[in-house]
Image (cartoon, rainbow, N blue to C red; front, top):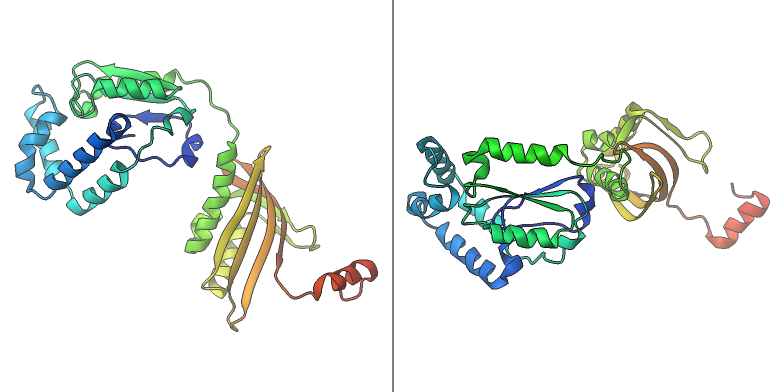
Length: 310
């Protein structure tokens, strides 16, 4: 959802099946106007709520709003936290994302009220022209807070949009495939055992072709493995170097390292090939190895040719 300003990360757009847009991208049409508005709101945040309520409320609700709703919105405004609001305003209001809009490929609902003075329908039409997969729905007589003042019309518009969506594919998108691995890496770095284990299917299994007999069977086995690593290597970190996706598989080049109890460094690097089902790792072929001194390429060729040193 988009409020008075919009913040979007280009990469994850394809991970969402549906986007619902409500609000306005002021700086899309007028970057200088956006900065002016940002400065104005920043100044207003320094004032007591009672001083800004008379200015803000008429831009959020229509004169026909019930006294109960006016009191509700006023109470929410009195309870806001200026520091958090300032951070959000600067985080969202100082970017120009016009180039992102044409890249949106998922069904997108632009839901506006024709009585909205903060996010006028003219901006909705501009967004509609720029987003190729968008649907514009305008609620007659609705203000900026259309969901509060006209909840039935608002919900009906959302239902119409969602009910008319084409059937979505059951397979995970390429970006979703990579996202599973990156979610796993983040969980390893935060030592969040539950989050790390949740990246794996209940019936996960893997094998290490270069290490006979090394297998993992089931999510409980995954939990035991990482619980031990988190305990034995308290500074464990992981890094994804590269991911390649396709045909419900993801090839992950990655590195994991940490300090053992004896002070030595453990480094584990290589490639894992995962099958992904329903946003979880279903199976794997593990080609990661412990980093160690093996004597150079000649020693490796000796091992390959003669078996010496194995």
